[in-house]
Length: 175
Image (cartoon, rainbow, N blue to C red; front, side, top):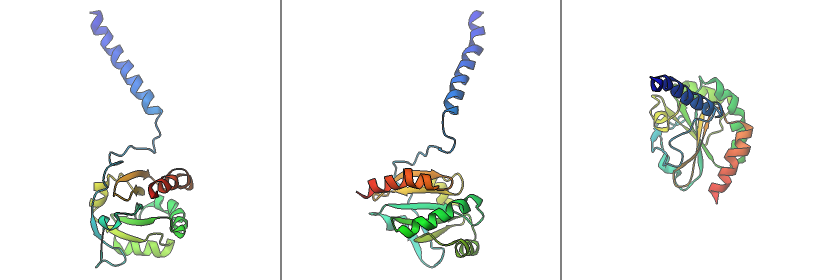
C-alpha cells in the first residue's frame, strides 16, 4: 500500500525536474535537428526573374546565409535594416527566401524597404521552408562551403547576433 502512495510523489518529482530544466533554457533557441547536416537541396524561381531558377547547389564552395522573409511578416521589418547594412559589407552572399508570399507583394516590399539580398527566390507554398524546418519568419540559416547548416537564427537577426554569433562563425568557416 505504501508503494502506491509513493508513485504520485515520484511522478511529481520527475515533473519538477523537467520544469526546472525547461526554465533554464532560452526560449528563443529552439534546437534544430539540421545543424551539422546537409542543407536541403532545392531549386526555385527567382523573385525578380521568375523565368530563372536558383539552386542551393549553386552555392557549393561558398559560405552563405539563407534568410526566410515575407512581406506580411512584422518581425522581418525589425531585422531588415540590419540586413541592408550587412549586405553593404559584401562579407558573404545572402539569399532571400520569400516565404508563402505573393510575388508582387514581395517585390513591392523590397522596393519600399531596400533589397539586401544577392537574390531572392519564391517559396509560395512553403515547401522549401518545411524542408528547412522553418517555424515562422524570419529565420536564417548559415550554410558552409560543403552545404552543411552550421547555425540557425530563429527570429530577427539582431546586431548582437550578427556581431557575437554569425560573423565569428563566418570567419571560422571562411578559413
